[in-house]
Image (cartoon, rainbow over all chains, first blue to last red; front, side, top):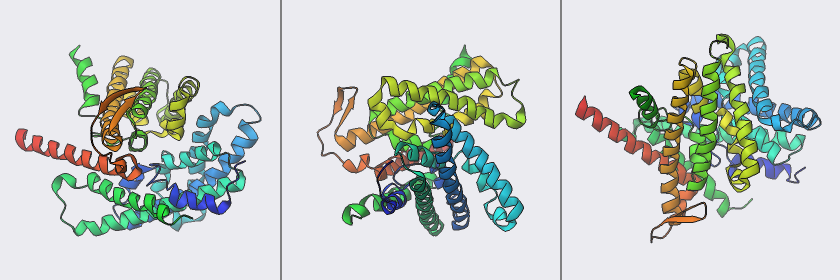
Length: 195
Length: 204
């Protein structure tokens, strides 16, 4: 088991190894669903939820099923199936018991299956040899980091609707330049103030 | 013969996964710190893409429409596992530097996108050609990104132990860092948009 403290894992997941801005995981949703703050918030909520669940379930399956049976070469296949099943399950449960939440998350849930950030969390957990609590904390932290980046990005993009942007820069190029500026802040902030 | 060539060229030009379809951005930004990593990533993705297209196309009459996506994912995950194990055994250095992005080929939208949009509707031969075309298009995009970032970020391009190119400048190490990746792709896409709109204005 890795010996990182839970606080260090959390700060790592949110800032130092921010999934969107530093590690480039989940960029499709980062440029796709950040046109307004509301849908970015909905997507982020769904991602935090699924990431935490996936980190827990994937840890249990990896430790108690794949490793004892010496099936760890099946890790990738097992994890993607687990995530797909989990997303379906979460969708059923939310639709049945929390209809208002379902209406706000609804369309974003199926998207999460192919979001590389979720598979990234569970794979990174295995690679860093985290224990159960550490895996769950990293899952939550990655989700929170994702949310921070999504909200900042969508707020900036909403405001910049009023700006005059050259035709060739509109849309994706514009989004990537904003991302570059945000990413710069994330990379350099903790070089100046170490945690 | 001309259809084979046009199907192949489509993957590099009009349907280029990065500049045309805008799919698979995560690996593009993450691994292009060096040209060598870019080539490794492109090779892995090409293998998965070609074989996934081959098998999806060969099985397209047997796969029931309602469960096709899970089946596509299983097929893709199988080939990704093969790539993962082969790279770990034969190119351990590259395996370490590509890290989590090799298993993440599974959720690369390029591959499942081609399985769904092309291989599921066309015969085996053209599906494989499409696989080659899209894979080459991806390689071209990775090479452009990686060359710019490595050349200006470190002042030279070193591939598999050979120094290919050196320029006498102060290296702009910003380009090799994560924000540099966002900036490079943003500028490249803007140039691409500009060229497209100029072509449109000229030819109508």
